Amino acid sequence: MVERGLLIVFSGPSGVGKGTVRKAVFDHADCKIRYSVSMTTRPQRPGEVDGKDYFFRSREFFEDTVRNGQMLEYAEYVGNYYGTPLASVNQLLDEGFDVMLEIEVQGALQVKEKVPDGVFIFLTPPDLHELRQRLQERGTDDRKAIEGRMVKAREEIHMMSAYDYVVVNDVVDLAAERVKKIIETEHYRVERVIGKYEAMLDDLDKA
Ligand code: 5GP
Image 1 (cartoon, rainbow, N blue to C red):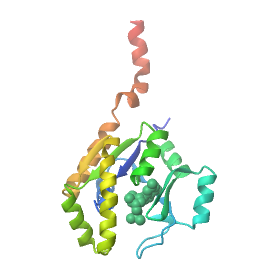
Image 2: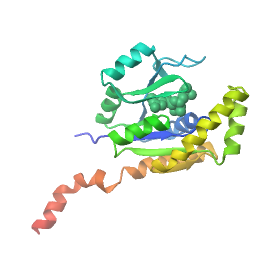
Image 3: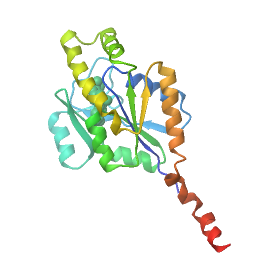
Image 4: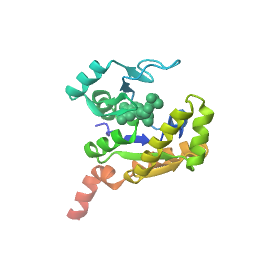
């Protein structure tokens, strides 16, 4: 029987570099990790590919999916819906892949309720000054939007205590290395592996 994969929830404030770190983890990872492609109602940005970056869908379609119980979690973030389609996550986990969700905090809290044995990793900036600088350098937002993102970032950083691990994104490759180590180590948790040793444990009682 294939060992079920780990559900990894990866969050962090806007601008912290979640996407970049996630891609660095996937580039190097020899472990079996797959990215869960979310569904969103936000407009597609230039360069984004439907089905790869997100499934871009209408609000009606999204709401139907939620009503039909087909979302593991979902949240409204800055006026748009974002959610994790349940079926594909379950299929990948059943096939033995670790599955990484890159989602915001409200969604992560819903996953924690439903999948308490998931691995919850929060990516943090070294400090708020650095985060503001990264948002400015990214050049995708005007001054007002950056202030909005900073307010949201403060709320999100407050929630880091709900996670199992906090990784600082000071240098992308180092952050990716830390995330990989966490995932590798999680595979050895006693509650995940003890089932494999049942026969030996039974033998101990017989001896
Ligand atoms: P963006 O519009 O910049 O791609 O994403 C905005 C925020 O939504 C990011 O924090 C991103 O991690 C989060 N997000 C992306 N997909 C999902 C999802 O499926 N569920 C939830 N709850 N958040 C998501």
